[in-house]
Image 1 (cartoon, rainbow, N blue to C red):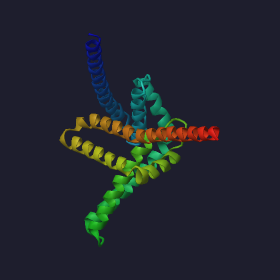
Image 2: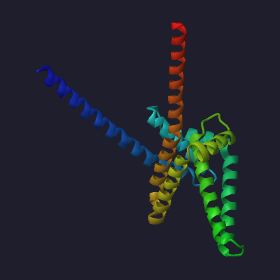
Image 3: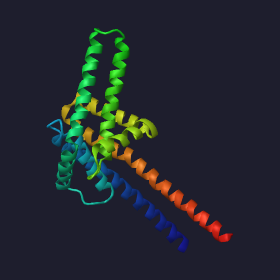
Image 4: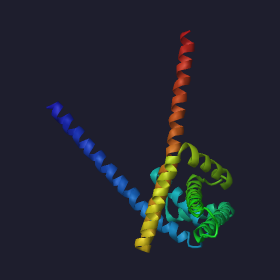
Length: 228
């Protein structure tokens, strides 16, 4: 009888865990959609796009960590991101405008090697967009945007190229959503912000895992020293 009761309790616990996991995933999905609306509204002045994306990513991180996060917290984060990041945002937009001009010239046929120039311009545009989004996702209050951008470039073009490619896929989803129906841009941007948070969270998890490994190795060394 005890074995049956234990088995029944185990099945009940697993079912409750699966139900809680599904509810959590649904809450994250719903929060991502809401965050997309906030980000799109905050990005209407255009130059505030990166700060708005940074505030949206910070909101989703707080939600995932179980912290309080409301639209007032989002606005507070947005103000801080705009104050510290408007110069970087202007430079980002200037780089995109220059690449768009290069692409237009390459497509006009005025220069030789048009197809190669088009490919380079498109690749450069995607790289600038993705690295800008990764910079916004990595930014924290008190950090300088140029320093965060350098870290994002090292990570995005080196150690975590796969995460950058994942964000390229997210950009493709946003583009298709805008092409099909413009209001779909808001939820698509929210999903893109969630994707950016997940990509940057991998590095934090890897650092935590590396710290655990280093602690275990240090403990092993101490034990060996004590045994001697």
